[in-house]
Image (cartoon, rainbow, N blue to C red; front, side, top):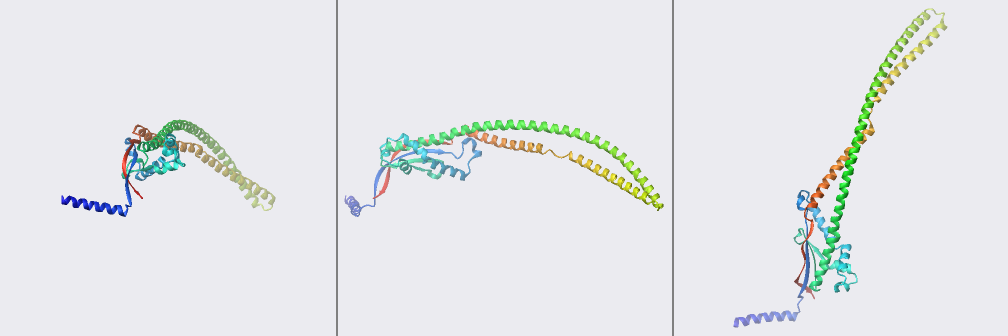
Length: 321
């Protein structure tokens, strides 16, 4: 009995000291409403396309900001406009943004949306629930609809790209065949012209040589007869004429050879068409890969899903006086 009195006496003294000194804090109860949402790093079916750590951290920060975004909170307020705590606020969106807390306990995949305060549990439940529903509707479901639209557009783009490849490939084949056929005809014509021109040139060359030989012979005879200077001058003029003809014939043969080389120049338009087909094929491969990833992701569980609807609890809070 004496031992009990001593303990009671000590406890009473401690209580009295605290009461006289005035406590720096007071312990009270508040309500907590919270919901849990899972944000997967990547859908289960496509772990091979999993987000990099940095990318996932960015995803989490983005989702946390979206929860408190203007259009999400505006949508939430439409559901809870009649709540007393909302009615008494002038800047309703700013107030709700300050009160709503978004965090990732343990820095994992679970995003917690919560609110703590002296408001009734049912009211806090309605506040958090409205924000969660607005987030799921305005962000998650809307993103899913946008993805469906993008899938449809991607399929259309793939079909169009395939049609373009087919049409350009047909055009390329037809142009190549036409060029090959044209090249064969040109080669045949060139050969015929070359042989014909060669025969003409050979005949002309023989005639010019005969003329030059005759002129040289007459020039020597004229030189032996120094008195016939006027005849020698005429022969020299004739010799210059046939020498010039000889040079013209050589130039004509060189020109013919150059024309033959020009017939082998590449078709620039055909090469551009071939490069365009290759570019379209690479683009088609990229789009097919993206479509494959999105199709698998579509079959996987939702990347963002509610794993715990809003619940309320009583919690102890410490407030400074």
